[in-house]
Length: 285
Ligand SMILES: C[S@@+](CC[C@H](N)C(=O)[O-])C[C@H]1O[C@@H](n2cnc3c(N)ncnc32)[C@H](O)[C@@H]1O
Image 1 (tube, rainbow, N blue to C red):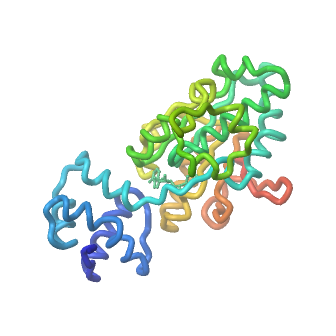
Image 2: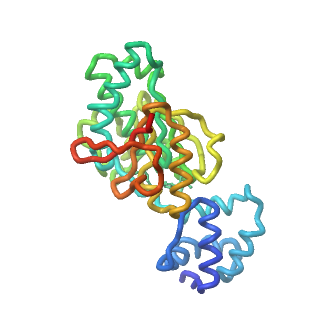
């Protein structure tokens, strides 16, 4: 039986979660606290969410329990090549543009950040798209030699270790992945699919909380994927985050958001671009 949360406890825990990771729980989300935190609370000897909040608020910032609350509350839903179009734009338009700059010696390589990478499908999809493109133009060895660097971060340590393992079960592997990609970039072992080493080597995983100052992560980047995460944040935090992200993009750099997300009303730092009906953004020069 899950513990029941009363109004006061809900407000305390909601504020705690927002402070920890930016995720805003609307009033209708009390069930999330009950469903996702009851086990953690009782495992930690708490008989109510009030006691659990007291335990959390007294814990040091580095306490693993805080991390476990964030892991439990955040939604890690993801797919291979999610929404299709951003990866098509990357393949057909952005990578060719950067490749031309590389050939003209205006730039050395391409740095990409997948800023809320969940179980790795997004950064690995970026890597596979880049490999497909470089194969097509006969320069696959450029990718192997480190020309494309993908930094993949997420607040959730548990999720990151799954991403880093690059091992997927029968359910996860089918979600959005075309058969040709499965053949080309995975090998099957014990009913699990392992991502190819060549793809894996292109991605570096690191734990990073988007609430934290960006000085803690490596930048700047040419392309940032910040997809299906800002939707969970407050209006005020979206503004702060879009401004920080703008500061991390190289001149001419691109930003991709999730299908239901926009910078409109939050930041003036980006130009809106459209490609075959899909919206994406470019930092204003
Ligand atoms: C719904 S998934 C989106 C995954 C992927 N970007 C996609 O579009 O498929 C949202 C991810 O954001 C992460 N997240 C939530 N709050 C975060 C924060 N403050 N900092 C970094 N990652 C966060 C969650 O852990 C989760 O893995």
